[in-house]
Amino acid sequence: MELTINNIITVVLLWILGIFLFVITLPICSDIHDQFLSWKESRKTKTEPMHKITLPHTERNVNIMLKNVIKEERKKKKLSLSELARRSGHAVSTLHAIENGENSNPSYRTIADICAALNLSLDELERHIQESRSDNLS
Image 1: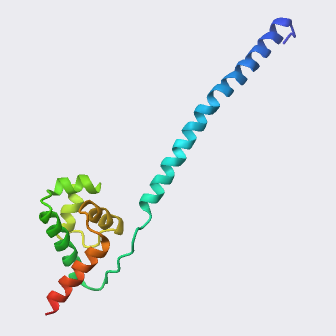
Image 2: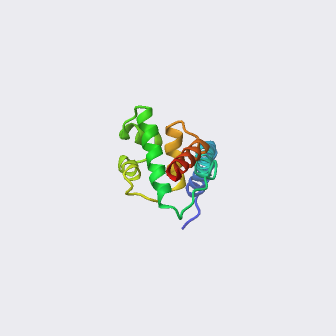
Image 3: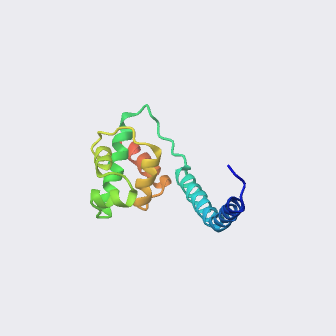
């Protein structure tokens, strides 16, 4: 390639244009990056357990008590399964399976989300289960 004044001017202008575009897009990319980090951090805090509930896994009755408590609380608050699903962020089929005993081992996150949607603390849930357990023993 021949080194002419036109080629030199073209290269310099493209170089200046590249720097100009970089300087203009840097704050935009930085904002997008900050928004992504903020979103990522908010997702992380949602998945961290708020409280550990200790339910004995060896008792079959615990699952029955859990489903009964959830169903009773939902009915007490006059919520349909679809409304509870909307509030908890879980599918109606998931809630239906829990309430009907088809899902005998729901995840901690699912239980915590359902309790939050019912305005029921995990401590209250555990207390209800303990009460049901003592009622069944007597």
